[in-house]
Image (cartoon, rainbow, N blue to C red; front, side):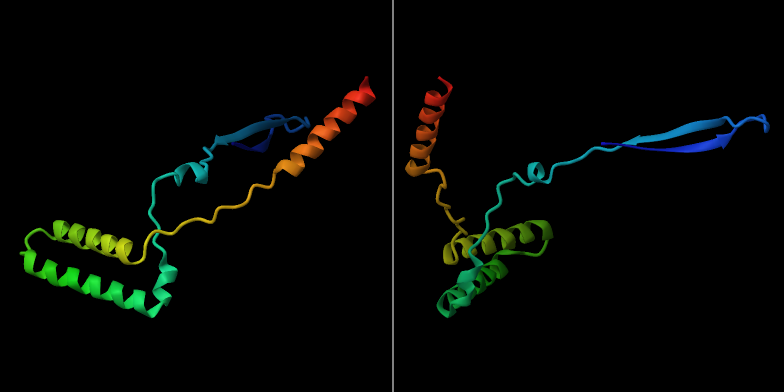
Amino acid sequence: MVHSKYDLFKGDNCETDHYLVVPKVWEGVAVSKKGTQKFDLKKFNLRKLNELEVRKEYQIKVSNVYAALENLTDGKDINRAWENIKENIKTSAQQSLGLYQLKQHKTWFDEKCLFFRSKEASYNAVVTG
């Protein structure tokens, strides 16, 4: 995408009506948001947390994971401990909540549409010749 503006300056001679035109041109790069979001992201089905049984199951799994991590971590490497916590929360969420499934939409182009398209094509063939 190219943007441009210009400035006008009077010439050296005051008796003329000539102006010096100085363009200001800059170029920007447009980034598609759809292309940047193509990474594989697992979404959990968080609507299941509204159900009391599932919520309690998830809370129990997370608390068990924290109890196990407290026994294992010696507190020396904080980055490794954080990675363990993150992975354990993800696995317990996937086990109790499951992954979010997108709705499968019906296709709008079916046999009826195909029939009318072939009927229109045969009509056009007869009319044209």
